[in-house]
Length: 263
Image 1: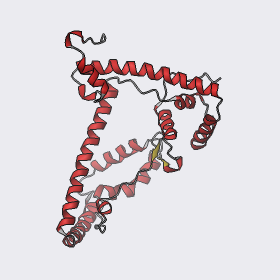
Image 2 (image 1 turned 180 degrees about the horizontal axis):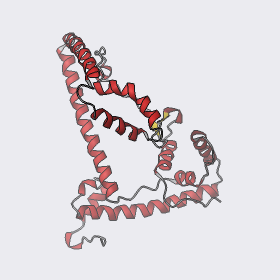
Image 3 (image 1 turned 90 degrees about the vertical axis):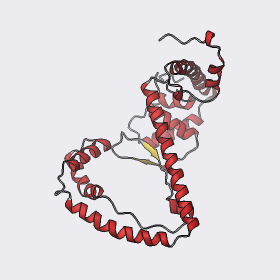
Image 4 (image 1 turned 60 degrees about the vertical axis):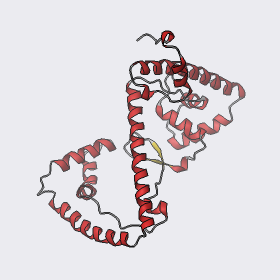
């Protein structure tokens, strides 16, 4: 019986457990360098023209900063090999902002020249579209803008929830099993595939052990989440509370009987 399970499941283990349980393939993931070795699912978003089945528009030129960045990123990587991806980007942005307009002139002039050519090509491109196609483009762009705002609101709520101590989901039985495994010196991809294979071959008694532990963890989580949500309502942050049955149950409690947990 494996019993060396960590008390607090780390976020990467939760990610991988959900990755396997969702049936996604690891071949559809990429290892992003210098970002704490995170595995991130590959997602290719279609352009507006692709989604509407229209001819591709002319490509917008890169900004002066991006031109400068392509020239100096490798140099800064050599200068600061220990910086993470985000730290290196911050260092590059700070360096660019310290440039005077005269120092930026070479890249700025290149951008202006290509921008003028782009504007002419884009004008001709739009003239070749029908009014219906233009209307479709405008509608899709508007919808994408709304979706972007919604995603930002969701990210802000998630950040606020974490800062205000929202309980973390404990994951499932496979999460606990994954946390009990010693990776050693194995490559991450091989370790995960191996863990998934061994999980499928576990005896019923071991499976029951992890499933029971997961059930206990979920029960604690639901109780902690319920208490946290009541505190959020009291604090005026009902926007962070789930908008389904949990919130409806809280609303049904008479005010004179509504008690919050101690602060």
